[in-house]
Image 1 (cartoon, rainbow, N blue to C red):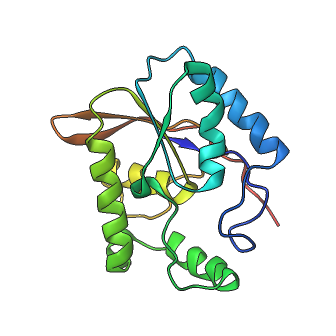
Image 2 (image 1 turned 120 degrees about the vertical axis):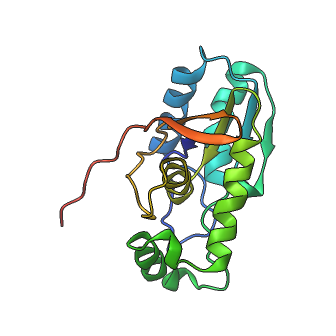
Length: 177
């Protein structure tokens, strides 16, 4: 799973921003890092920032990108842009067992999507989605397990219908305010 490059707007100011200039550079770097890996399938969240992150690798490999809603950003249905930040902060501090049925179903659906991959696949997704799959693969009850950097690559494997974490992607720098 590859986290999208830096977005041109925040989670609380735009529901579907594209990439910033830095984000495009990060996407190009991720494509370069992945071009020698034997990737058969490319999958992306339907959101612009994930699709734009997938584009350089798709171009390098001459492959199309399949869009899959199961690897989209954490659903914040019915929330205003302003309400999304405080809601997400609370979710990220919590445990999976305390989340809504909608979030638990989103997590189950995404896990099914990853487990269904029967060949080397690059999945372009989001911060919370990658955390959800790391927690799922490691049986960690926390929602936030680590801080994947923009365009970082987290590797999983699937054996006998079980998702296993192989390697965490590069972690984002910790902010101190």
